[in-house]
Length: 363
Ligand code: UD1
Image (cartoon, rainbow, N blue to C red; front, top):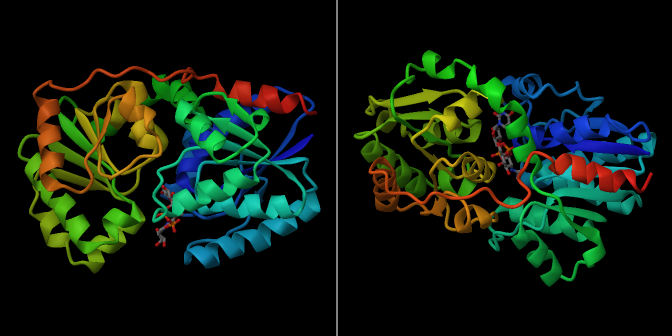
């Protein structure tokens, strides 16, 4: 059984690693790794392949950055040729990036079965490009592997046949568990001179936060206040770097002496920074889950989340772009006043094994 595994952007790489490893244990499965090239910078892609010990992609599509329509269309044109040539039995996609939806649409029209890992998540906010990608991909998928109960509920409400839905846990947490020990030795805190110092770890890249001047300014104002109490480590996404320049906010950044800005950093270094942070301030989807697993307080700078288990069970709260709420909550953490959180059901490092066991039954 030939299965094409698709990756495109940074948050895909840590999800595909455990799946490829699990597939390699089945002689009846022939995995083919396709990288669309949605993310292409060394620090957004190659570094992750190295850290995550991923095999070189069998096929690289080199699509690069563009508008949503252009990028999605380019991926579809290239991927159609791949499916034509490879004739896979299944195409497996992860997460919610443009590559996920584009490859699903191609596969559906070519009659190839689609496997969606991380299905059913909904923010119910269609201004998010990822929400559109999630809805499209789930509507077309034949196997829907879900990370949390809300995913099952959402899919059932949308009329997805129950026989297609499998609650298998979280493959991103599989990667985290697999690399946790290795990440402890990354040495990044020495390199950034924060070893032994309390610090907040910040990530910011959602278009709604960084492409809107007032929102980005409000959040930088919040960091300015948090920085009075804690050092801040902020690896900057290329989109955010571009927008800070465009909005001429570099001077605000320069005025913060406790702020350590870095280029995007690799998987192991980032896990190390997360494990040792006092608090994480983020607008990422995956980081809400990783902090919940690690029991690290997480303040999410968004109005909604497609991963409600991180709020209901985990260590996460939502604060939007409200400067006061960001600062207030960071102070709460410093005062030791934060919920404890639990690890959600089936986030045990074995999600990929369960997923591949289901697929292997079809071989
Ligand atoms: C994409 C995903 C988002 C995910 C994020 C993680 C979609 C719709 N969005 O958003 O869900 O959370 O990745 O990083 O798929 N750029 C570079 N180098 C790169 C890649 C991008 O410089 O290797 C720059 C380009 O200027 C590009 C911009 O970053 O225009 C945005 O990249 P893009 O892939 O369009 O979206 P992300 O914001 O990265």
